[in-house]
Length: 254
Image (cartoon, one colour):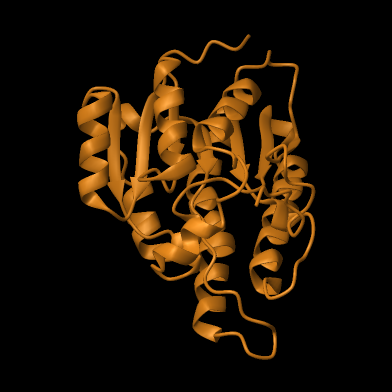
């Protein structure tokens, strides 16, 4: 089992859901956490919870390359040697068809889910290469494995995450850097609230009638992946609620 005590993990989208649960879980393993997000009050609350000596907070938008580089290229000396990168930041906006979709929604999904992941990775990977060590976990989605109606662009962005994950594993293979992806199905987080643009009723209905995954379920899987012995790489994991068979098939009680 890999000992991660004192190692540094950088997590994007750490202010809620899977990212927040991951920060807590990795901190419990003795890791020092760089928590990245756009909501300062939530970052401050996480620092109060985990302790200032164990957590560095960075406020930036992954869509903005200048903000990403400004934050990650000037880390304090004690926080520069990032051992683990968890690319968690991502979102879905709207449920529009190809012919009727909102191009602003498309831009947001591609900018966050694809370009944001690339910007952050580009800032962190060179240091891992120089040190010849590291772990990367990219958080994808079941939408990166299949496509469903009115979700084509979101699915395309998550298919891109799947492809980028595979490409990273090839490119970083010579440098002893393990690369993994977790692709969740339905997880009860703020995901649907964002997709439905704040409509609480629509968001809540997504998770009714069955037992959805919780953010901590994904953090649990991530802990298993990153603590495997150094000769083991869990390359790709799809996690679904027991009632979910595909993106569009969920067994719900009436």
